[in-house]
Length: 243
Image (tube, rainbow, N blue to C red; front, side, top):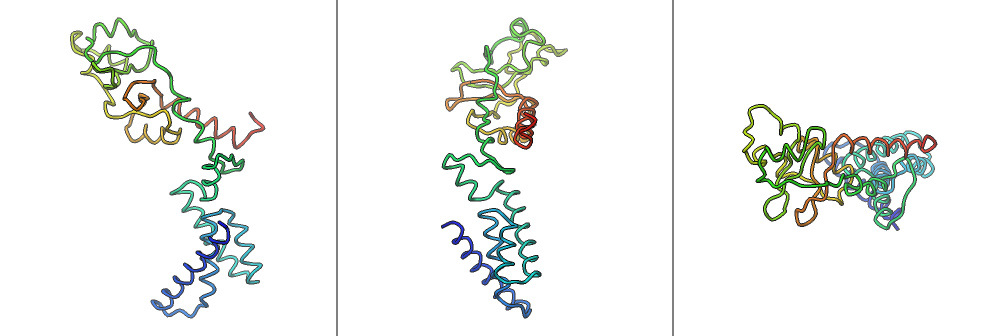
């Protein structure tokens, strides 16, 4: 199974590293030390449970210093996995199968909180060729934060920030496309809340349009609202008694 396979692969990799280490530096350390540390470190990365791996090493070897070395390696493996992958491989497998793991590191809700559930559906879109004067009549101040623009084929052509419609020095006869933003940046409804937060930071945007596969506008999502929903969900999962 997954547990014994990770132990075996970890022991083999640890032994290989131990042999290479001894050949390079000539330190007289038993190869079994490298094997045990590698075994528990890889098992922690695949399965999780760094303390369980430490106790396993302690029970197997009866050596407290070796158990402490295993704990140190397991914590490093856990930090690396969390930094670059987010959760252990076994947790990922359970979520792929549709299982919901309720724990301090549960990530199933991240997949459920999608852009499609958080977005605000737009009541109307504006043609990119619309004149600023007409746009001012249709979208008075305070009516909406951003207006998605579409081309003649009805596909997304950028965002118009409503406050910029009323900027000084703008010719009312200019097309709306002249003040467009985020023409090449958007979100998809199946993206998770974490992917949306990263997209806001990457594009330095406060609002992004949500498009379908045909580049048709489905709605808009605001960064502030997205962060608030994410924060509320994290607090609800960590402190369910407060919900």
